[in-house]
Length: 143
Length: 436
Image 1: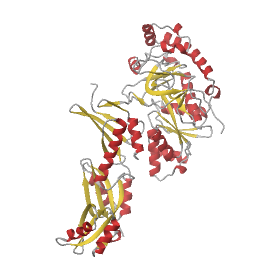
Image 2: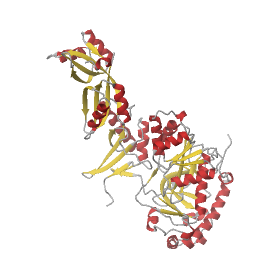
Image 3: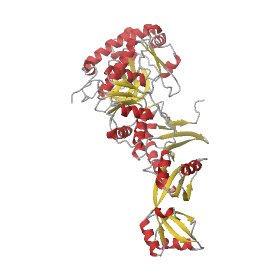
Image 4: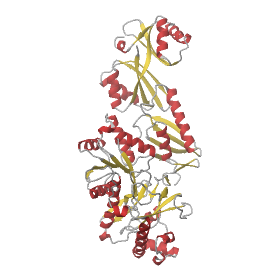
């Protein structure tokens, strides 16, 4: 059970994101969620898309440094306090988090949180134990 | 395995006999230069030396040195020792240091130069049955013409590709089963990288050997190229001022380059005092051309720092060996008062798991040198967190500091974002304008 995130190294310069997003669009890749971490010199773009293989091949061919990262995807309710409740589960289980980002469902009244933690299996066990539902690559296009 | 040579009698000549031959040639050459080159005659006169004072190689130290600035002052014909109508070729330096030098050749000079390159090809295992892909630049640069001529002399099927057009290089290499590749080491690494990306494993590449020179490279880079291409990589040394590639070359021992002593007389001097140093000392390499007719430089200071060794070589060649140049005063940067050679940076990168794709940027802010090293990040090293990438930058800066003694700022950059020239790599950008 896992969710794959695409991680791309980008130069912090004008037009860098335009090229990446245009390339994905031209190959019919749909971005479901994204987050970017940037410094003065470089940025790290993280994407959840509907077609990992096409995204990897096309961006790699254009010379981008791209790799997949295993992350945890968890479904939470769309209401105040739902995120903090979920994060508390991780905290109580001593699971350290590197970063997170979230996106809304198109169809249901739910949100999805993408978590990058030190130990994926431990995080999933803890969250499932608390009654949460995990999302996988297969779910991405249907959300 | 049977030992093979291009000119066995000369290449395995007993040392005493080589020295005798060099003495005879030197006496004749000094006369030839004194009579025909006014520029050098003036230098000898100023030093109070006449051709009669030179009775053998033991008198070599009496002669004045020539430096790159002499060549610039005498541009274009000042050091020519033959009438132009006897010359058949001009070659020129790449102008890496901004100073172009033109060299002239008679047919005799071309022949001896190509013999030297042929010796290098045979020492790398080449024979009539090989297909030799020459991917050095052709033209004024000596790399292409030199190896091309040597390849013909050996009888290899010669592929005169010149440099660049990497896809075409790879297509011909595979379709025509090239077995020997001659180019700069940085271009060999680039071809290797490209083949790897295209999904080739070393055993699918027809090459068995490579002859790489014209720029500094390290042992780590050699191993890297050898692994990627599945070949044995041989070093070759030369400079336009003395003829071109082939002044010295590596044999299967890969422990230094045999100098073609029948044509070139080598010395090691103290670069500060000009004093000749004994065998085994580290110092500046100086060459005297013993046979060249048109452009015979005597005691030319190469600015390359290396060591000479007469240690018996298992290949059977008796020619003295020179170490890989450990640095070149032209390449040396002085940053915050510390001597930095780009080759040191390359060594650290390979040790730390990076490709040797880097660029040094030196500038000056508030009267202090700034020193940045941009290094291409690769898939194996890339992580998805900012803290991960900055930690790698810090640890690489630490490793560089340990090697160099000064602290650089390391910037990891996307792959292939540092411009690669397909001839010589531009490794240093010095914005300080210290010489204006």
